[in-house]
Amino acid sequence: MIPATMTLGRIGLGIQVGRAYEPAEAKPEAVMILYPAIDLKDGQCVRLLRGEMSAATVFGDDPAAQALKFQAAGCQWLHLVDLNGAFAGTPVNAQAVEAILAAITVPAQLGGGIRDMATIEMWLTKGLARVILGTVAVENPGLVREAARAFPGQVAVGIDARKGYVATKGWAEETTVKVTDLARSFEDAGVSAIIYTDIDRDGAMQGPNIDATEALARAVRIPVIASGGVSQMSDLIALRDTGVIAGAISGRALYDGAIDLTGALKALSH
Ligand code: AMZ
Image (cartoon, rainbow, N blue to C red; front, side):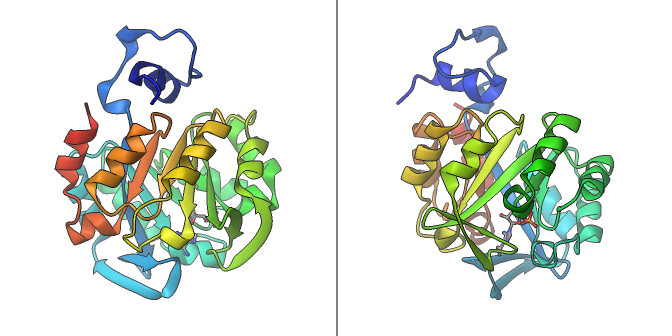
């Protein structure tokens, strides 16, 4: 494992592993950020199984109340997905997202249906801390570069993959683009994070793909956030203990109670 001090330097301050580290700037909670997920389908909070809309479990019909619950438990960030938007290519659950943004004080990131500059600007103006660009990262990488230049620190790339190959448009479309190639292509673009989802693990409660996530995190300097499959506390510890993964997203395990959010946040803070 890489010493925690070096990891903190890389993840929290954007300094590469191996460079000088300033202890005075360390934030202990920055070792690995846990992002509770709110996936929105038809205005409700749901979790899917491997991205299939037909396999949705509804966990609530008040997204803002759910966001406030996660915030009250102490989370530092929220992860939001407009699922209908990812399929439609344009925002669909905007009302629910706006209700969440109006309710919370912690920063939130959102993916799904953000495919042009006007939509990026719209969300950032409405108070979203970070947009997640998935499909356009493959189809129009120039837009990612332009957005990252225009909005430093506020643009993340979502890389969703099956067996190492990137999927787009609600994961309905397969591409021949390899995860690592896509990630490396943004190395100098100024994107603030890569959110890597292993689709086969997503919602399956069978554990995350730690090896693939770690390999990706070691292949790029951009901070990598792991998504898909986190089902118990030990998964979070294993991701953290790689020393190179900046964050982890968890949805179903938090709704099911398999992971206690307050306890997990506490465990990850030291
Ligand atoms: O579950 C799905 N089918 C799904 C999902 N969770 N499809 C897309 N998404 C998420 C991605 C990313 O955050 O993980 O939507 C975002 C990408 O959307 P877009 O519209 O940029 O491709």
